Length: 266
Image (tube, rainbow, N blue to C red; front, side, top):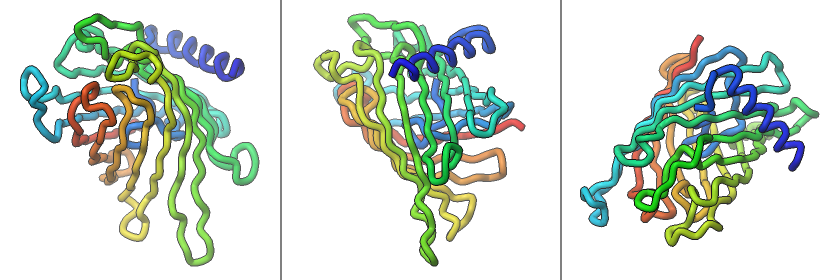
């Protein structure tokens, strides 16, 4: 654990040096981080929108706020077996205190499948939604200041004879700020949980079609099950269409439809 902490602190230091500020979402599945890392010098622009699937009579306005997130992530290491990305996001959800503190940062360090030895899994450690805690009694939940640390492993299941690969399985664990990731009663013991996902390129239909399901544990604002599909319009442009089911509606609001535009440069 101490080694992982040292790696993360080094990565965050590099983020500050290269970007000028610790201003995020890393490369993800639908909702949770993935073991994927942006290639060296590749700049990724993500524009994510979360639209409420239903009204909420318990909300002051009758409907929970939609969420918009715009972020940049860039690969910063020129190595094949050790990769790293850093990024920042601007997130708006039409509510305070979050919209007074909309910037957050991320950092991820990892190694791809088969890089350590034959059949070794992909491994990633990282941190996201990095920022100072911005909490008050009236609106205690914000994105910046969640300061989520996580670790993940992933492995693509091999094809067996005429049976194609069934896809990639990922599993991990996260821990975040206790006050930012509290339970519905304000308890501070809900700030951790498992990360699980399955994803697969549906080559039988088209190499442009990708499906995924992911799960984030924890009885906090981030706990959710999400599923969706992506279509690649070109080598560098794709769009995810998904749906998120939140574990704690009292914290996260009603479920959401999501569209996530992903563009890579170059």
